[in-house]
Amino acid sequence: MSEETIIIHNQTERELRLDKFIAEHLEKYSRSYIQKLISEGEVNVDGFPIYKKSEMLKPGAEVEVTIPPARETSLVGEDIPLDILFENDDLIVINKPAGMVVHPALGHESGTLVQAVLGYAPEIEGVGGIKRPGLVHRLDQNTSGVILLAKNDLAHQYLQNQFRARSVEKEYLALVDGRPPTPQGRVEVAIGRDSKYRQRMAPVLERDGKEAISEYFTQEVFPEHTLIKVSILTGRTHQIRVHMTFLGCPIVGDTVYGRKNPSIKIQRQFLHAFRLSILIPGEKIKRTFEAPLASELIEILDLLRISPEGVH
Image: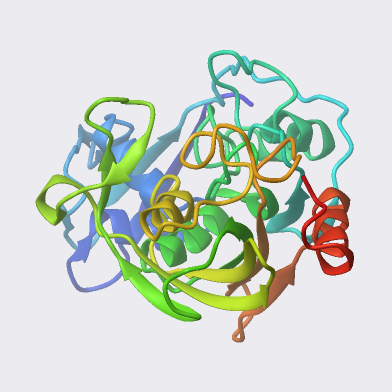
């Protein structure tokens, strides 16, 4: 795409805030993107560059907006099968398998979810940023389940705002070692970087970390394990894994926060994002998306039900 210049005029009789005025006239671009253009000097008012997003436009003012060409990205789409739960013009909802990294990082330059989606829907390139196109939220590499990506900037902003406002309902299923202290409960323990192992997170004092709230509900009890449903009211890194270990019942297969030698033979952690409810663009009632449990997790539960002591 080549550079594009757009000229618009304040044809009202009142002063208007610059970023809001542009966003109302250029509806296909999000307000955050408009603000970025202003801060980078891509907006002129009456021939002069303006860098302040809250600048007030006088009646009759001429606004010139330059839309730069899309930047090159090193991300290349890959032909990787996707388990698509839902798709429309604004978003795509996927049941991510365990083992798949969400976006490229050191040691994971290919085979990621983002590259798979780029291969399937190239139009998401650059949406929300060139490094993580379309991403609104994340799942750990070894956590499976519902994850959604935006297909345009307006949808990206709309969906991301709900995550920031904590209005998205997120529910997980987890098999843990032992039992939580009560059949259901609420964990309000701040999470921050582990002081000894910087790649890990840890429970910390509130002043040293970020607020983290999880609610859990027992679904099924076995002699040595418990299947629980967890709703997270915040979205901190490794939140459920840290909170369950804090309660003394780490997630089965989590060799970082739980047992180094899992109590059940499993190549991943038994954590699955099975339900997500969110308001999608153009609708007035929240949509709920559900991802069925992966076959290897169903097999473990079936074996526990048949022979609770024999799954090792």
